[in-house]
Length: 148
Image 1 (cartoon, rainbow, N blue to C red):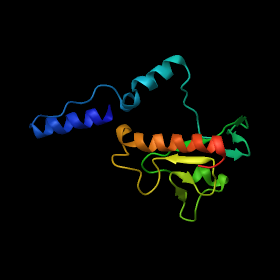
Image 2 (cartoon, rainbow, N blue to C red; image 1 turned 180 degrees about the vertical axis):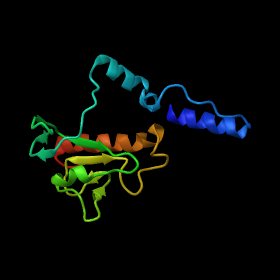
Image 3 (tube, rainbow, N blue to C red; image 1 turned 45 degrees about the horizontal axis):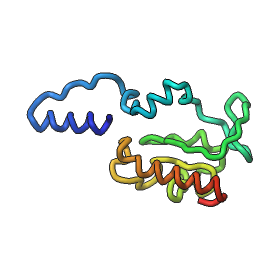
Image 4 (cartoon, helix red, strand yellow; image 1 turned 90 degrees about the horizontal axis):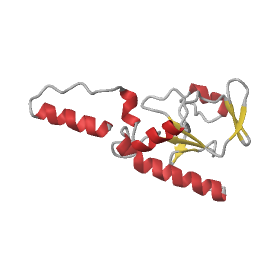
């Protein structure tokens, strides 16, 4: 959706037309059919960041503990990672050292779209797809073998 909107906007500008204001909001961009279907089934939920890792999961701000196998952190364009300080994953410059999107210090933490180069057009859903697939594969491999 984001790619389609951007393409249409460029086309309108090249044709000398004033670009239309897109209908809907930024949230509509990610409402691809599979996301909409998951939301409608009630299995897609937004949650606040957790407070810290524990050996077999995470602890939420209210103290609730939940077992998880892996965490994928979608950071956006200018991540403020200070809330991850207690996880022991931050370097001296406030960034997280990653190798193939995976934290060097915390092997159960992957950061999708984070790092120096994450792929062409990775700021779009179409562009991040390859990275997301690779990350999913790495997590599956890690869960199956303990190594990614």
